[in-house]
Image (cartoon, rainbow, N blue to C red; front, side, top):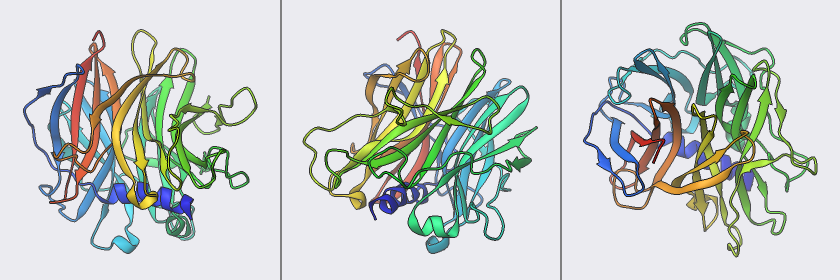
Length: 358
């Protein structure tokens, strides 16, 4: 039940997001980041019933492209989610295309209800998209798997016959990846020739089976289709970003979700993820803050910044702050991220930047 609730939480986070264009003023934060605030805000798009979430941004030419998931929220009991495309000249003013570029599969396909959390990389002129896919049955249980599609232009996509390319496991509840995996964050390293796929997975605490833990896991591929999970020295799947909470109460859930990574020109891997806490169980889950870790090899990360942006401060992201999409460009880190508040309800996508030299 906790596994279904965990991925149900991620699904609810998606349902509480929508976007519309706005270019705000900037705020320089004490931690060195500049927050431009809401760059896409709900309620002002030409499709008011579609909720949006999960931006994945690439720099192209002098502008930017975004892939994001959207679905009609008028029927929350069976919301069908597809992937859309958006463009921007500067990363702040966005135009979202209203025609899906990738849709759920037909019939009894493993992804026949929802395609969420797209993450797009470009390798040798080919776009690779990774996404969380839900079938009718999987959605009812809150369990997703990770799919792959390719495109020559980022608009017309072909799904991988090998899908799903990454799945969870159901044999060991105290090992990572139990019950399902999702929230992919793809990164291509041209030096090593690897495609790195960071994603969210969970387990029950080995010390206390009433506690659910979430972490960023990693699988790598040479061809973008066949992946091998990165393991630790004991042969178990490795959590590349995980933070324990000693003394946490029974039935609490916590850990990292919605990862995104980039490589800067100095060869450093930068991994961003939202830290989720649920002190009273999954129904109380909140994405509390976005953290930042670095690595020289893409596998062994050191946490360097915590609470870059945080929920619970009474603004538009008071309830949740999550889903970073990070790009290193022109000496800066650029991070698009999502957030929402409960009363009055609102959800937006924002942009924050920070000089690499800071």
